[in-house]
Structure formats: structure tokens, C-alpha cells
Length: 102
Image (tube, rainbow, N blue to C red; front, side, top):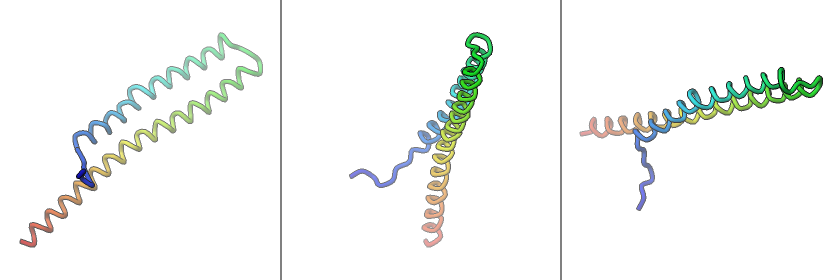
């Protein structure tokens, strides 16, 4: 029978760090790079009196939404760490109670 609860602390830590690093070292830098390129093309190579400002405003909204999504990814990493810490604390509390009753 499979256990009801199983935590592999090293794997939780690894995945949490992977999520954080993916946001900070891959996603955010690439999003900033893309925004710079879009801003550049809309001011130098795709210049239309009304459409370019509209496209730029729309991309700004899109970029802001992506930034919020990346923060959610970091939130998952933090939740994983908090769950792990809560279980470690609970495990220690149970062990302390068992040992104090002997």
C-alpha cells in the first residue's frame, strides 16, 4: 500500500530552487529582452501613426500580465518550502512529545 504522506526534502528543495532560478535567470530576462525588441521595432521599423502606439500599449499589458505570472511561479516555490517546513516542525513536535512521555 502506498504511503498517505511522503516528502523528499531534497527533491522539494531542488524543484523550489529550479522554479526560482527559472524565473530569475530565464523567464524575466527573456521577457525584458522581448519587450525591448518589441519597443524597438514599434518605434523604428513598424511605425504606424495609430497602430504602433496601440500595439505598444497592448504589449505593455501583456508584459505586465506575464510578470505577474512569473511571481506566481515563485509563489509555488515558496509554498513548497513552507509545506516542507511545516511537516518538519510537526515531525519534530511529535518526536518531542513521544520522547517526553517516556
